[in-house]
Image 1 (cartoon, rainbow, N blue to C red):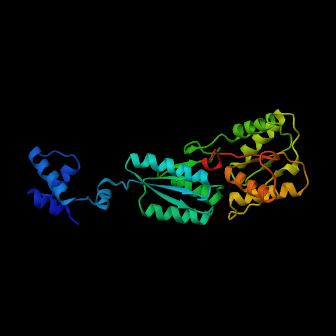
Image 2 (image 1 turned 45 degrees about the vertical axis):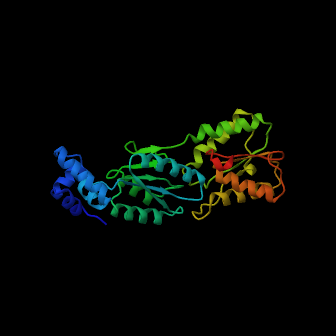
Image 3 (image 1 turned 90 degrees about the horizontal axis):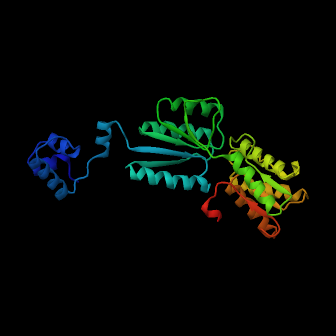
Length: 286
């Protein structure tokens, strides 16, 4: 593999001249042409490591997610990577499997790699993780994605409008003739749970429907349970109670997929017998 010294020797210039050419510095046109010709002839690829030391940038950002099987995050990753690629950045994907321990361990390893920024997603953030990542955001660009804070006004975040979307979903089902709308949520301690559930309740109120506790399912707070399992178990729990159901609303598309799996297992026709609506508009659910 050719080195910068090889380029300098072939071009008949100094190493510093080659460096100036590569960084668009001031050199004569004759020297610039000689260096560029040598680079092309030798197929020289500059060392990213050396460049990182010089510029103090790794051109790398990290995307930390709680569940790689959730298509919401894989679609986010695709969009993030496309934008990063256009700007000559690389993206490191970290699947924490909804573990605070893994989140903190990944963060330390990423800092050792001198990443330039972090996009952080989590289902729920305990006090330890919250203090760590908020503190980290004071030293490194961090974007909290699909997570909202009410106690910090100096952090960067991007979140979906869960309340309005859930409210509209209930009204949509009502206009489709549904009057017994079940709701399968995330565990109560998952941050996105409350606004989406409150939107569901407001949607019922808009339609003149009375909330029925038997039509609502909150999974236990188990970090290892997948969203699909939440949907499967939720549909099973609600339908096994004997309550009448003509629609199931899920707090996320993977939850809806789990519910659909259970309904099909029971031979229930969708949407003829029970309609199902999710949240996130994942392409796989089309």
